[in-house]
Image 1 (tube, rainbow, N blue to C red):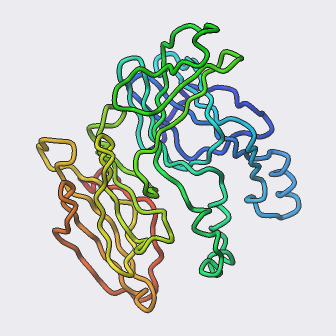
Image 2 (image 1 turned 120 degrees about the vertical axis):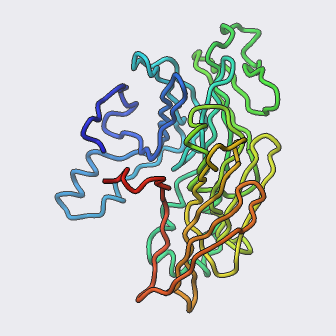
Image 3 (image 1 turned 180 degrees about the vertical axis):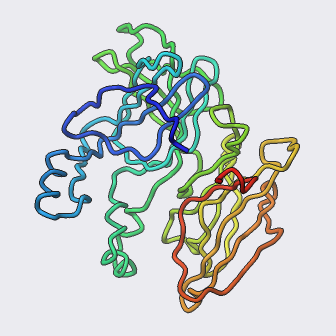
Length: 319
């Protein structure tokens, strides 16, 4: 799959000995988008961990007083076109990104800090029910940034002027005293959303309306919830079943689809409590978000919850 891979663009990191941790990058029709969050990986820390046989997780450094830097890179030339600053936030997944007029819209699953990484330790998970701050550490929300590609020139009178003139958005952008641009996001919905998916096959890098995700609100009535979000109306639909925990929802378009959400959503299923030898595959109507079918089976042993997946129309694609 990667035998023909090549480097198409590269930019220097802000802090050479502390490069930003990145799990995702953005792609529009004309640009790459690299989001440098102030959660960094200490190179000296990695060297020390290697020699002292220490876990690499201890090499993370969180610089909460620093900005998150959003870099926009030309896909044609590989050059850095512009960059934007945002108040510090932590993220794992970019939902989607696209261009409209002289702006880039980028939607991100945002957290105020990387505390949720501490929730991944086994001892922390064992005591989660007794930890009143556990749910707060996981409290992330989907947010939208709007990046102005051709803003008005900086003037003393325009320092406090919002540089975004698009309709139907509350996102903002302002000049900083040093001439850089500070962008402020708007919340899309008040739901924790993770492992987001869209209609990738036909909408990647293009204007879109819907995304699908699993709930990241561990204190919700049913944390095993799949979510469909309408980014235009800022509304949502959900599916859940008690004691059932779905995977990342995968949108599969109908052949000859007529609109963006014309298709199905697939998710693998596992169950908790005394039902851990139980797995399944869920099929939802993507438009109504109602169940139209499932397959269930019993396994020889407990089944771990999966995170990511992909629908392959033809088995031969992986041969």
